[in-house]
View 1: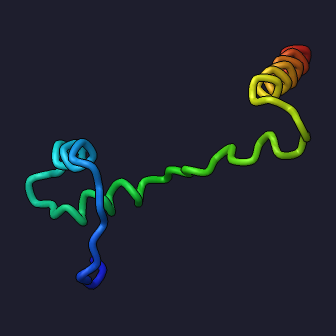
View 2: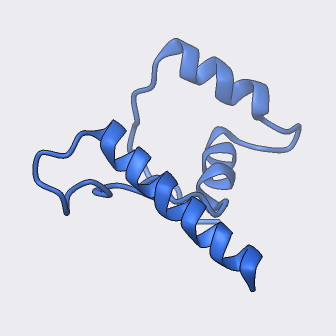
Length: 79
């Protein structure tokens, strides 16, 4: 466990309640937060996915990627 500090993080009452619900019997609040952060969760996955197309909307990006995915699945089915 990391060395405790006197830093504070502000969270809403709702967030605090949700974290408390997930707290295990022997866990501190820091343990709960650390456990969630240790899970392999890439919060930025897909961030900037549309940046390579100037002016393209998110809906257009999704449609383009779905079309590409369908083509790849069709190609795999032919193999």
